[in-house]
Image (cartoon, rainbow, N blue to C red; front, top):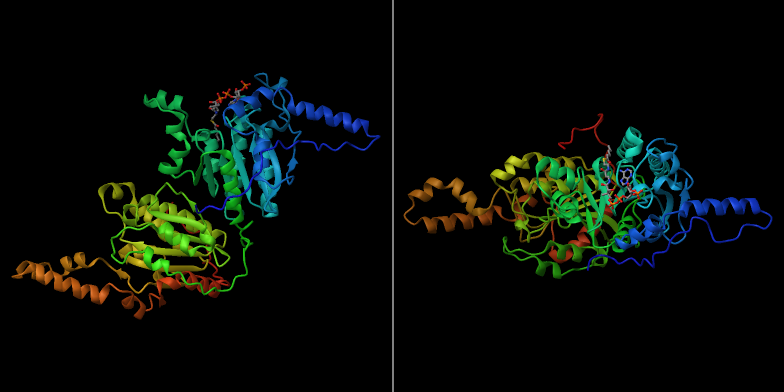
Length: 538
Ligand code: HXC
């Protein structure tokens, strides 16, 4: 298994108030404290039991699983709404349905909020939103990642447009924080309507199967409008978003493994765009030889193999954090360490659709490349690509637009960029996969590989159509022409002699060559052009 398992310990309820007794002589303080604690717990036991019976933890239990022991500092536990109408004035629970504050993960500060479904169904009103705004503001001010644990019925209906206004304030802050601090959203319950745009604006969205849902309109509305009955899961469950829509970055079976994985992800991220991810070892190029790489990748250009095995071989301790594993699996995107440094690995996956680039794969890789670039994470692109997927459906769904997103993302990336061509790189897909022409800093190629405009058969058919038609023995002529084309063009030498490949390396030296490249490029600085911003083909 490629994931590091993170010990989590048992889920414990974090008590709002420490068990230690107040100083003697402070009876008033003690009385007030007890009153407040009683108020917070009041009448919620049924709701807590219901939450547990659904296999869900409470907000505080989730924070205990996510954060280092005893590290949570809560803000505004006594905040409550000041709203009127529909009986709200008689129902003013503390926290207002969201537990907010800050804690640490592996000793590194993060900001968090956890919606509490046991209070107003976790729905978001003005006070609830104001607490989230404060968490986002403090996260930016202190340069800390922010993690949202979502479990909510959405806009609090009784608070009307003030609830919508609260959402808008979250979205605006998230967009302003984009590229400044990492944003992680975890879906542990319903997340409906416009509320789903908060996770969609985050850098990473985790979902738990069977209990987490995201949709703009629920099953009832879908049935009323379209006449189609659909289950919660089919409409917006973790697999819908992890496999089909690409809205979920990571999918888990249960909350404990999900929150443990969030901890692992945080361990790979910088706290903000000015810092670096924690290095796990003294960096300094290791000369470590990996002969297995040559066996993993078959020499025949069309034989499938699993690029994940290559990632395992290249990454420190064989560990990598794969994003969007089930969506667009023909491209792989993962965070990993090489020689102690965190890198973003992008690789074509020859065992799915022969590793072609299609629309979703382009979008998946584009978003990943932009994340890595925003947070100073070097990019290592492992190329083995036959081309872009041809077809009517692809053209109609905009593969040109989607491929342009990937192209744009790579072209504007200023982090260290290393391209490794393992086996084949053809045509437009070769250019897009971080070729020299679009700005990679270092291009490495295995000696056996093929970099060309197109494959030999296709090229010979285009160039020698008339000669082949007129030939007495077309098969023999074709074989000779194909052999000539292969010898002349389908090798890294042609590109290396022209400076498009920096070095032709032994496959076993790949990991060490990447490590040397990362060391060489570590101080890379490249200011972007002066302008307001580019017009990324979204
Ligand atoms: C106020 C809400 C609420 C809401 C749930 N509750 N959603 N209160 N506003 N939006 C309350 C319920 O009244 C109930 O209170 C408690 O939370 C638990 O809810 P249940 O319905 O008993 O739970 P469950 O059966 O698990 O169903 C959960 C649910 C359902 C699927 C989320 O509650 C639901 O459909 N809620 C409405 C969802 C919705 O349409 N929201 C608005 C979306 S539009 P009691 O007192 O009985 O315990 C939106 C726009 C955002 O969010 C726009 C941003 C731009």
